[in-house]
Image (cartoon, rainbow, N blue to C red; front, side):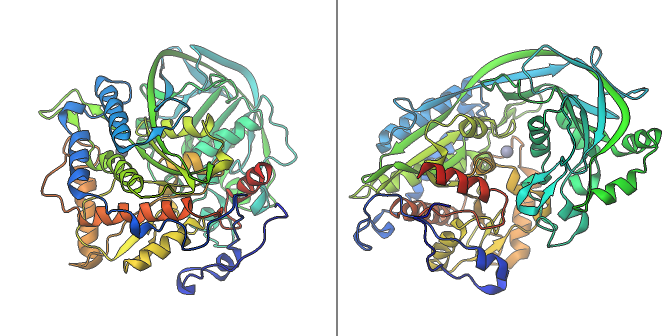
Length: 566
Ligand SMILES: [Zn+2]
């Protein structure tokens, strides 16, 4: 930590909703080196005009219209969306956010594995692609293979210094095939002192596990599917990974990834362990203890993957309001502009994605408009980033985070807006990934002003925090907030709110019926965007660097990033 940092008094949250450990953990921010205006001299958010409901409606209706064809990333509708966003940004008075461009080109690749010519063999058995195993390669190659790779069980496949955990300690897995469990030891033990207890940490996500295996130099990484810790059945695994897969074309074309990533059915892994003379249940139990050491299985794995690949281009769209005093520090708004496009069957073929995510895309434009109308520019810069290919696996945001056009260390914090329901008056906000960063303290301030209370994500074990664009950026260190309108309705309470949410999930989510309707009640949505605007303005006019709470998974990375920048 930089010596210039000094602790400061922290806004105290009600003890009822935060553990003492969390309170003790709230760290201080550091000035960003620019002279700050006197408090009160800064531009106050109450000078900003309110979000204009009629204009917001118009933007949502436009983005969700059939003319935009469901906004698939690399389609004519996608190109139309990008053009519209740039025009709106220009009208609002935003400058190009990426040098002299309003776009960051995002190259993607669609890969289709040929199951007839591909195989995975472990020990004596070649596994059936689909019913027993799914696998793929993140390398942009038509053919990838390896032979006679030693197989090692690495528990949860986690290296987490802040939890004193290293499943790869004392073992060299270079060129080897690692098999590991899904989720994390906190879920396995349900012990609140182990990782984050029942709530999933980033270490529990399959994305992390493959990334870690690559860092360890493994040839292949296979996750054991178990329904409870995965939070979904094998059908979801098979359905998601069979057929064409879309991914980014990274600078190294995926060369740094393991050759083969995959999932195996639990029953097959049990049988495999038995052939190696190992007791699967005993190893699973051992894996949830910090004493666990990786176990070589005395088996060899061989595989070949044959792909057809198709390259295409989409783009993130980004506008900027330049800061008046510290333009090198950035506040970030993120919303994904893409949706699913048109489907082949049915009467209404277009998935319009009105809620998901015309709302958030229109929202960041309307927030930009409100801030741009202030008589004085905020002291720090503000980026409005509409990302592509969220629906294909958070790809646009991942591309931004892996190849950022401003240094990540200079991004003070970010707010993601995704899928805002047009709910009636409500009493609460929900923070997905609650208890993560000091941005929540700032949210609390503005929620209080409007008489709203804050609820944690009701199902943290399902890892929703890891399923929208903020995570792409959060996992690179930048504090990110993902808050939405809560279900405790003024009329009808939580029961009414949950019914409203369930109706959307069942009848409209990812279906052609996710359409804009002029009868939408916009009052709560406008309020949410005004709160998001207030948080961004607060950050943009301050010299603070809010951090992740101590003991959370991205804190160490952020500390190192900021120390290097200062
Ligand atoms: Zn979606």
